[in-house]
Length: 313
Ligand code: SF4
Image (cartoon, rainbow, N blue to C red):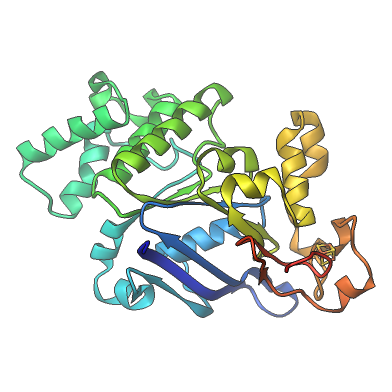
């Protein structure tokens, strides 16, 4: 049986209160198995980065639970925060901004080893070189500062830092969206290679279904803070069920000028306060859609769908 590493159960997070409340994440339940890549996809404002921050302990859920290796994350962060950081690491969107501009590459990669008390100086220097080789960075860059690196090189430094402690789970939050198109595929392939060779589990977050499809075993599609569809990766992209997934598939297949007309940033002000939040954009919407929000229902093909009008048998 595949071992479950991470589970969230009905996790919710709201920012602000009263009229200004933004329900960033609403009752999100996810799971991640050993060695699996879960893609989390949706437009800006769908809540996927808040999910990442909740998993990393940067934010605390208002309700629901998160567990890693069967242990509640809240307790883990209270009792052994350092150990938790060894189990779960992250790579973020803006590679140069994520690095301390006053530190050189060699130190930036060594730093997590120092903070976590790993090895002697000699062992750490050797490990830094191994990590640079694993992320395909030339040792000549050891003494450079972040501003002397290209975006792709800086992201390789971030990946090396994240791998230094040999985490079991790597969260990648839009790791290629700030990079040149020519470099994106190189970084995606590198992440996939490292995920396989290190037998890591990965949550890969992106606004682009095309990017997520490239490496995910399973995909969860988020809209307005909830999962609206989930299922096996390629299958979900090749035959989307939910109208929002269909829209993301169309956007992925469109030229960049047409894509801008299809997808954008989800603004909380433009969302209905009740019923299905996708009503204003949905070509299949009827009156029933505004009366209540549909549940996420699993069908016989292991596809979970949140929609009143789709066959979930
Ligand atoms: Fe569209 Fe209605 Fe389904 Fe929502 S519930 S996705 S509005 S058909």
